[in-house]
Length: 207
Image (cartoon, rainbow, N blue to C red):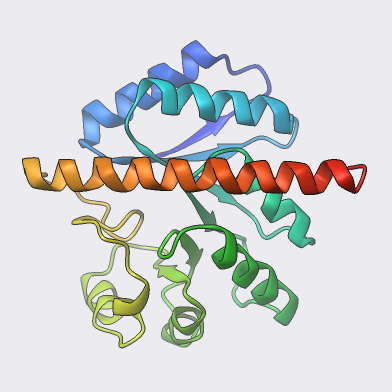
């Protein structure tokens, strides 16, 4: 699984080609996007809409941790299903934790992820916050530790393969595919309602 980096000049056609290649190569049910800073919010929304229009797939946005909660609302308005906070740091500040926790209020349960740098103390801090910690490297023992943690069962999504945590190819049965399709439709519907509310909030505040 590779992160698809979207540049300022990346067209919808090129992006869809990248997505199709990821699906074909990894038999994945989710993709991860990272937008270059120069890509406007409007363009990000359009590109995510194009992906969702052509593929029944979960879309996760990889990002650093923004300074303000409003940015999290903007991320959500793109139409992505989940967020992966992957900053180049070895620990999280109180303010960063507040920002990430705010994301769990917007995104569906089990769809906010954060880098744990293979540090068990960070894992122990993230899980009670309903944030799924992601090891820096594939480590079966560490993944087992995460999945067996008492808080993990309360936040793990109803999927056979957990996005970002299970990076190896997974075989999906027909029942799995139906379940994921239903979950995807539910999340998309919930998101449309919430995005409308956020847009109205932005409009009333003059943003």
